[in-house]
Figure 1: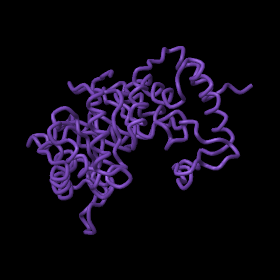
Figure 2: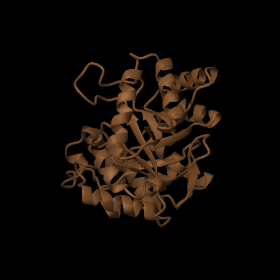
Figure 3: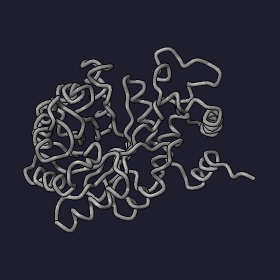
Figure 4: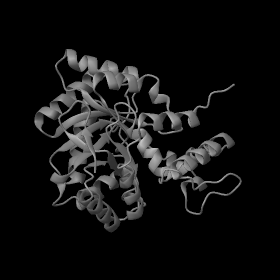
Length: 314
């Protein structure tokens, strides 16, 4: 397993992280425990969840699975989404965060969170209030580092500038959707993070499974796949995207790799990316994800892949 710095922190994280948004609903406890054990044994140390995944069940199953192994992982969770029906049961206000962090600690069966991420920008709460609360949580030892998720580049830049001016903890990471077919992050976020030492943690590296190559034009989605019902995946089921995936698959296979491995390796070749969050519901999926972290693309490889993604028009 390869490791990189978690942004400008002194912590090193595995280049492949484990996404757990289906733990506790699709994946039962015994299988969660098997996946966690296999991941840790393989050297993966970044496990990502949220208090909103499965209405807290993801955190609960992780709490059980990590008993006796908590110190071997960097546990990342998130807050923002509703955890109850009350008017203050969501967002990043001081009131909600102080309650949310206690709930996450209880479900995760731990007394600290390694990376506490704000799941969304909260336009109803002054960012100064959020930063002050997060700084207090770090000072109390309940949180080690803080990160953002789904922020715009200007929001992350504003938050970290204010944190610097007030001598408070900055966001060391940003977790956002980023993959071969979704490259909007490259316009402003990637340059900002590369310049200021913020670690980029992409999620949805396989575009919900579309980048595995299992979806074929003119054919129904495989039984049981997300493509059967997911509007997100179905949005990629157009001629242009099928063509790109076919060309990328051919390129990867000519080099002895799969399309899925290319999807991860390409992300890891991008500036500021420190770890790729990749979900798994089965041990074979986990093994395939882990294998992806061993393929390092050369600059010339990245250029060839980018040419397939954005061909020059005559």
